Image (cartoon, rainbow over all chains, first blue to last red; front, side):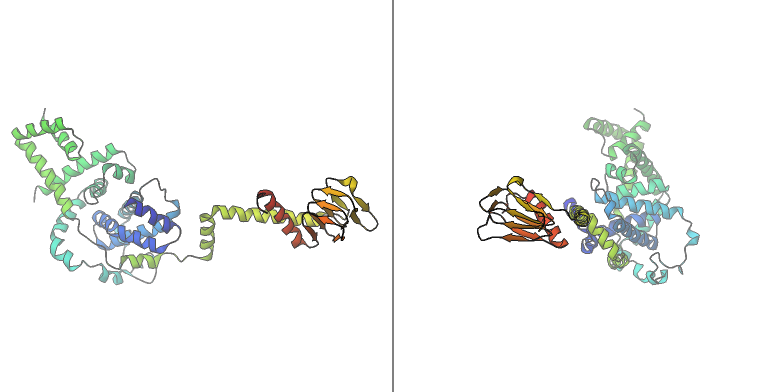
Length: 187
Length: 207
């Protein structure tokens, strides 16, 4: 897998858009998932995922190949989520044009952003409960718990993504687990 | 060991950081301690719970939407992208530009004095009035003969190239020239000649 990704990033670097499209296909759900679990709603999450890929594309020539591509893209996405969280929600309106400014406003996005029927039936309730539990975590614990247990990354990779030592990651995971435990035991 | 320390061990166990001995220690403790057993169970449940909720997909037209928003590659981008991707060719192009510049400068800078370069100057006859360098019949010259601002008349033998820059080469019927004879009268010829020289110096094995 890593070899395939290496080749794809190499081709994308050389301006091959098909290769870039394949990278999007590989990562779109992972990045969207991460963003959704951190920010808590689909529209913001899709927006962040989109912005993530646009940034990846714009900065491909600066990508350091000694890192895994996944580490790099997760870092960009995590940072965007954190930035989004800092912004005030009040300046966000449905009439606002999307960032690319292509004449689309948020109304036109709504239709495509609905859950698929399959999602709806099977996991909606569960997701809401989990989302609720996650949203009660402090942001610094939340993103790391998500990277660990939803994205299923190793402690080392999380440490590379957020640029904090592994010991710090462990402490946050321990506290995050405790917080989730006390939240969920009441259910 | 107290239960508080056990909780720390439980977390290390969940991170996969404990060894066999610690695991056994932990298990022995939990057989007797209900609260620690309960704690461990709740933590595992919390993890499983978070893990179970990971089925969510982005909308199907996501990729197309991102691709549609990519910046159009402008000519400038294409060019700088090309330069970045072909550092060797870029260096070669810069080199060629500089070379051409210096060659042209050489061409325009020279004066009109007759210049001869050969290994055997003593055997040559120089006719200053007609501005002609003559290789007399019966003489033999090793190596190249290059004349600037004048003609060359070869009656004897030259074991090399004969080149006249801004002049003509006359070869008599008695003459023997081992290499090429060449008259260079225009700047294009001049550049071509210099480039060929560089080529010949760099690739001595090729004919």
